[in-house]
Image 1 (cartoon, rainbow, N blue to C red):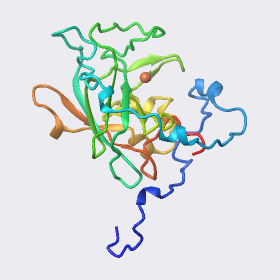
Image 2 (tube, rainbow, N blue to C red):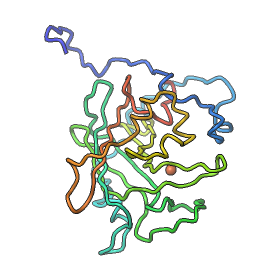
Image 3 (cartoon, protein in one colour):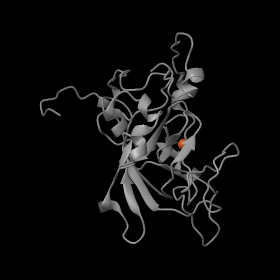
Length: 250
Ligand SMILES: [Fe+2]
């Protein structure tokens, strides 16, 4: 920032135009379900109402003590989930690189064998009786967050003849109101399946894909316990994380 800046209005009011070339087109036939899910007619732009943007809100008192620990939040007392123990951490950042405090993060994932705990899940891998697969946390004053989990396994899915999802964790980010919600996925550094995945391939820019890959961070590991992966989520601007959805009207 220039030292000669005289306009002292808050910078957070700046408008950053959405870069449509950064996000995948809605219709990407190699990802088969996009054919039926993508709009068939021209889009309408709807403004958010005030109540959608300003409320309701949530607070730390709504979170349980194990909500940010997927290793234990579904486990029987004294037991823990099977798998590679990891910490996922990072910051939620605005378009200027400033931390976003008070954002509700929710995350869900398959277990170490690549199986979800869901009634429609059909993959033959075993369920882990001590692993549920979802959790949540709220960013701190600097936009920081962290949670413990096990590394999810890849899983096959009915798209092409032999398509596999790379290991991934789904993220939902809420702002200060429930209409401010963005959804994305985090992948793991070094996974060869990332570059073979038909869903990942819908992202037009290689840098966009790389923004979804968490880096192994040995500095943040807990020795003899868990390795750490660092994943920052950038809400807008040129370095924006690639989101699966966008707010209406943006
Ligand atoms: Fe998934």
